[in-house]
Length: 81
Picture 1: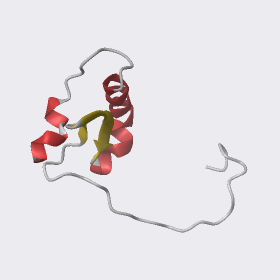
Picture 2: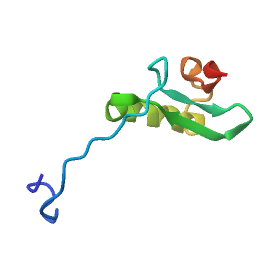
Picture 3: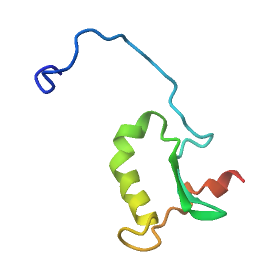
Picture 4: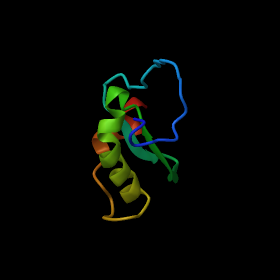
């Protein structure tokens, strides 16, 4: 890492945390049912980094940047209500 970030401080410690995931193992990527200005994007579990670009694209589309109405039905928060 030092090769790419020479100013990185020495030291550090190992850390391991929980990965947020959903009961069905699919992330939640959708707008809030009562306020479409609120966009959810969570629950990726151990695939957060892997799915980050796809999630960002879907969130941008939900926010009005790009194609209208992306098909995020399988990832809707509504599936838990």
